[in-house]
Length: 179
Ligand code: PRP
Image (cartoon, rainbow, N blue to C red; front, side, top):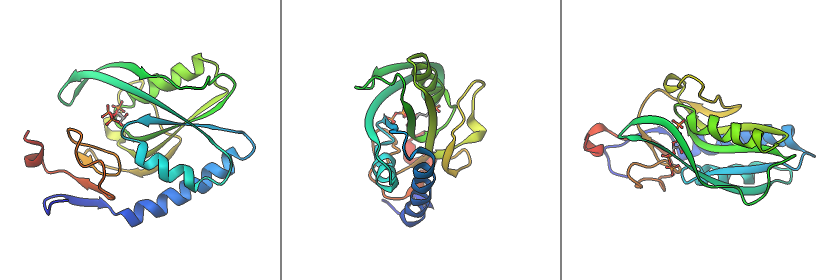
């Protein structure tokens, strides 16, 4: 990390919060054989930490979705690039995301899984930017941290595929994004 980035959430703070989320999810899903679905790629770091903080059996699966638009403006259209390997019919699904921004990606995935017959679909996101929510955008059921509308990287979140491996969540100054 260069000196320019401002750390918003330290790795230590994130670890502590993930541990608490794990306890909550353990209480909610014990005996339900949940399917924890990681939304690639951004959620992979949070997902790996979260599932290890959950103390009841969970099954893993992965999806990838893309939203279309130019620059930071999304068209609102979401497309599934990779579906789950296992059928979600009859399953208690927990969608694991790094961030809920407009909420369109998760609204699309939740709707899709419910159409496919999932018994329940909950959303667990490390970060939530409620000020960015679009009409019809999903709300998370479990949130690590609520943040303001800042461009953040680290812990899976990228700028042009960089910075995903930072252990903290940091704000990326506009000059580093060349905007
Ligand atoms: C990011 C993030 C969510 C989505 C949130 O993914 O990981 O999936 O955007 O935005 P929304 O709430 O406005 O739908 P991105 O498309 O950047 O892909 P990535 O996870 O591979 O970085």
